[in-house]
Image (cartoon, rainbow, N blue to C red; front, side):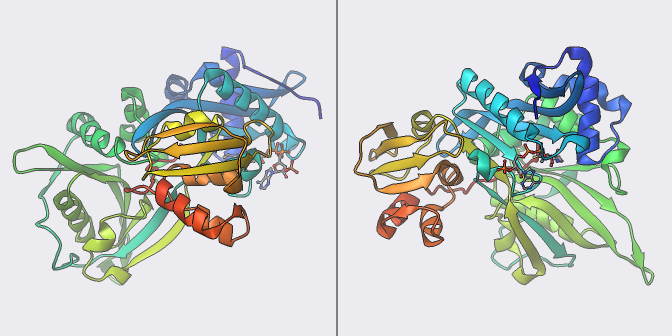
Length: 407
Ligand SMILES: CC(C)(COP(=O)(O)OP(=O)(O)OC[C@H]1O[C@@H](n2cnc3c(N)ncnc32)[C@H](O)[C@@H]1OP(=O)(O)O)[C@@H](O)C(=O)NCCC(=O)NCCS
């Protein structure tokens, strides 16, 4: 089908939002349009048109993404839709081609996204680069393990205090944790502190708490809400954690104990926790944490040398990767030389090749999750198993990747 993909005029962003509602199944609230326009990067939007009719949307946030040992400019691919009347006619393919051109023009070595369905984006070279854990823990009066540190006291704060304290804490987490990205003041306001009734899913408005060190420095925060329920005359509410960040073990222990002992609830639910959440080590009864692990951030490499040089590794090591790309954009053979300090140099090479892999699987390994050996065992990449293990050792990072927010 012939569609024209181009930047929409400013007065067409209203229609853009209407398409988001049609595709994702919500009714755009007119009161939210101003905030939407403040957050969106209009110059990065691309729309597909069938004649004059807008039939597809895509855009990106310009992210400063944390990678092992550094940060990299990253296109945060988002709001990708095809109008329900025009699905499966190649509009997503056309939008992705235009979006990729724009990413390459800007010189962003990588793009990342959250996928509404995990079957969609591998064909475009995105790989599962981080996992998130949905965790449900039953309330208990004394939840912490005997070896847990002394929990920090928890303070309920108003939104003005949170506006000052939360970004300070988050910044300390963000620079260490691959998969996090910097948040502007507008981002904090619209995506974290703004709390309209339609986002609450029947729960209370969000409650905001902080922890501090003995000398008063902020060390953690949580945003949560409670949905009150009663069963057989007992409180059976659900406490949902919206975001929890802690920079010390005492802060993590304090925040989790506060949530898990909350009165009149039956359970605490958190939808996106890191695979190494201290919670799992802090619980006296770890099996009470029911965990469902799922793919989270998907990452696509555009410029292999620039991307691989932007992160650190466990060195020294040397590999020649033969990378294929289903879109034909970024493949090639590259030598990665990692020095003692973990800095890398990456250049095109003529081989001999150590590992042959798809750009999707290189993207999966990029943020520091161990991927090579398991992909090789699954038959997705070719090479010597011992080399795949060595590559895992070089690429794996502590802490493991985590993206604490869907965008
Ligand atoms: C997902 C969506 C954008 C796909 O758009 P589309 O225009 O129908 O997709 P295309 O026709 O260009 O399909 C491109 C390819 O992706 C595949 N594909 C599209 N949607 C898919 C899905 N949900 N699951 C698996 N594969 C899918 C197509 O089969 C096609 O495969 P091929 O070209 O390799 O044979 C569209 O269905 C949509 O708007 N869904 C609701 C919103 C959404 O989920 N957006 C994605 C946000 S991350």
